[in-house]
Image (cartoon, rainbow, N blue to C red; front, side, top):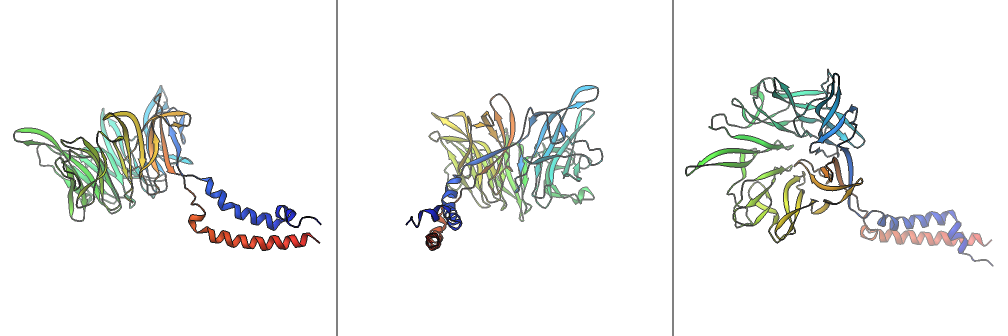
Length: 439
């Protein structure tokens, strides 16, 4: 008599199916071990982006939305009749599957951007266009998609529009103006018929000298706007600069931090705040140092107090480099340089929610990473981070970093009971198959 179990276990269709089903959770648990995947979107030296032909020379820092789409500006050398080339800074939006250039809808000429664009979850892009007339820059704030272009503000109403404008998911845009007639921070959605219809977050046209607003700013979906105010003040006969970090809310504009503010968990007082980001709840993260103490770090204002997020002393392993981003969940991304004997080195690490994403010296697409930069609006709720990466040799590239999903272990998901049940079924089927094979 031949063996009653050997042949059915290997060859019977039911046996093969059940064994594969039983093996799948074990194999799946080993397939993904976590980590980060970096996807290249664009890089300098490329002969064009999307349908725009021209050598890519420089790239801005990118913004990101919840879908993982990015927006950035690329300075390109474009072929031009009668000359070797025309230099133009063009805004693109999309992802690795396709990018779209923001163009004038009538002429189809790409918009010439002044700096870092922004985009929302609807795919609307906010940018500041700059056009030179008689060698003087004229700026306009646009809200754009691949099918439409809407003017938000221009210098007919705002004499001194700055380089930064941000947009929320409702399509409302925040921007700043540094002019003698309109000096402040404003919001608009494109429906304004006159300058009186614009939202005024803050305005000051009377102080002498005038303060400057909005070297950076952001707006969240609740309509909160975070921005800075810089001015020259005189204290005991000494003129000095002062920077305030401010945020708007239902109660008006509130002070987040300035030189002399004190965190609730520190003995010392803060220097001027810098490089700030805001989440969906209006909480603000920022970078600064603590006066008279060898301490620097990242701090969070939650609406009532300031507390420390990341602290660095001469004994720490690394020192925050000022780059930070905050997503709507309040998760933090930041860069830091390694410390050696209390001094910072050129070795940078980028963190997201405490996890290492990228380090100086890492290899990406055959090149060695030198440093990475990112905007305060570069982190979404899926922990995807839009990065501007510098490589050794000077090549720049736009990457989107995202966590590789880790498949939970089978036992951790309570799969043991299912495994046992399938095992019992397998035994019954195999025994039946074995009995049939002996006749």
